[in-house]
Amino acid sequence: MITLHLDEHEHQAVLELLEREIPNLRHEIHHTDEREYREFLKSRERLLEKLLVTVRTSAPGTATVVRMAEKQPHSIS
Image (cartoon, rainbow, N blue to C red; front, side, top):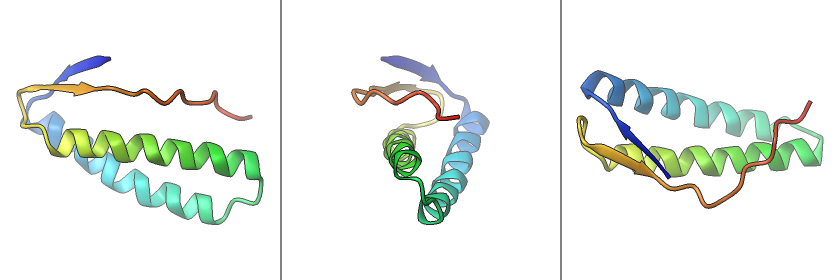
């Protein structure tokens, strides 16, 4: 478990990054032919979606607790 304390500007920056990256991942998933890499990207998308929900439901300046039960695979070369 990780606890983050984000001020208002950091909170907004994390939201913007996640909101921009998730659609980029979806585009990459759609255009990826290699099954193993596609599964890695889908797993990454699920992780970012969970993180986005957590950040959206927390108020800036408060502790954001992120619990990631799903183990992420190592990056694929």
